[in-house]
Image (tube, rainbow over all chains, first blue to last red; front, top):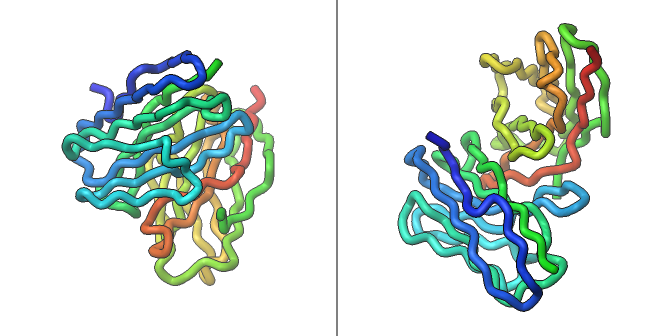
Length: 112
Length: 111
């Protein structure tokens, strides 16, 4: 069983579209995260979600919105996609904020 | 945002020990030291973390300086599968514990 699973693995879409990436963890962790890794390989945190408390990185455009239907899921919705959104997006989870993180295998988003 | 300094790259020979250094001179008393690695085309993978004492697990050892201003990740016998980017990260109360990744050290392992 995959501990943190993301779908889809690859996503190619046109500018202006709205898309979602799903993330599920079966570890019973309390906190989930979304990270973005750009073409220069820098990993930047976008959101963390713990017990219905959402912490947003202030540099993330409001076109990005995380949605958590329950503790095991944290989906990422992106509206009006732009070319600069092309990147690999990683979901992660941890038992508590400062314990070890488990990452998913990533979703490579390409906006054309 | 990253408060750690690592060499951009290091090389190692297969089956030899590897010592990956990290400086974190501005570390506070409540900051945890985390190490992750990212193999090509994969997500980051947790390696080890610690607060003050040295830590060992099946993957590696973490040696923390007495003043906590530096640490060293030790891979006891490097394999080709250990070739990856290794990130040293401080987990701070100020960032709600969120991991802020820096550039990391790209480790190459030669057969």
